[in-house]
Image (tube, rainbow, N blue to C red; front, side, top):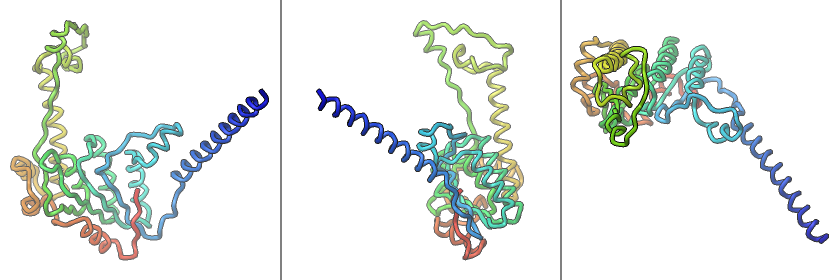
Length: 280
């Protein structure tokens, strides 16, 4: 009996010690991830926009451990804003590709990069491909914020315009015997149409078309301004897309066909050989 009690006590004690060790380890990891490294005297910021961004990292300890390395939209924008006025930061290089960023996220990052460039600091974007035969509108639009765009020789630019589609499941619900009972205040409030309609209503089609035209117009205008073209020229290029590497160079959509190491050598030349790379 005494042996059993002693055994339970030892097991309980070991469990408590193990839990304490685990907690200390967790705290150490969080502190290590959050520790700030000193910024060199001359810095080239380095970013990877192919990884995508999260809106925020939750406050609980486990989430911080799992997501601590995930870049946030706010973190990227704030880093760019600080870098704009920090004399230690002398350049920016970023890998740009299709990462599923929303139009709003792209615009925020793009505006911050344009402000960075406005201080006379060089910024180079490089990509293996913009879309790889698929959609590359958003990633290329983001890349035009940089003063130089490098595309891998075997890459392409999927600049081919925008589209929108809406799934209507009213027919499926009919077969299942479900009757959605919903209402809306006006014909342009069309969120419920996916459940109640089998195709676009006139108002729904009009609203969706206007939204796509608005986003497309902003992309065209942005590309035209940064690539020194007229909007009509950009629209004509989009009608011709997508473009293979050499075609994109001839159309002045990119500045050079180059690999990653070429892009890094170029930003070093612009910023200075003594500049150190520092990730966001």
